[in-house]
Image (cartoon, rainbow, N blue to C red):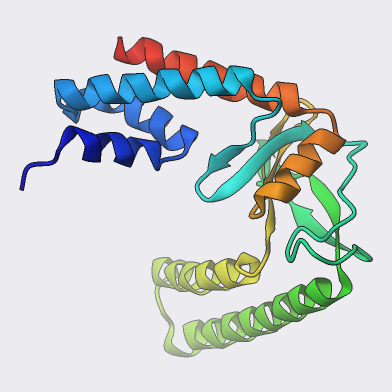
Length: 226
């Protein structure tokens, strides 16, 4: 079945800015017609980004705002339900950075306390507690099995990894907030709710910085296609 030009155009229009940028980076497999439509859509997105008062990027399903690591302010409504007023803060950690010292590895990360409403905070705490206890129990059982059956060391490492991966996924799954990469006093705040991300960017006066980021990415993608 032949795909029409309009179908291709609608497909590109349905994608987030970052998805189009990634598609432009690997555009060798596109036909000349699809390449032209992608270029037109990127140019339209660039015009919209320049005219918008703020731009919040959607990256892998999360609205991402790059903000300072200190002096951060948060909106007065809950980032998870977006209805109730906040009353309880929960800690969130960024991705780890590891630096090798003389005889050891030093692990660094950014930690931020983000206010939630009492109901959402209670539910998240309960989920975290269940995952922590379950993960600890499974690791203990696996450790005993490794000793009892004398599993080889590589297999024991694989087992610990296979246990930790789903537990870590379930630990963060109900959350509507994440911290991503950080560098030079800035950190990525990732939110599920678009309204909360917009309010967060406005409250911390980082709309221009985030809009500039996506504009640069769009410009580079356009240059790559031309």
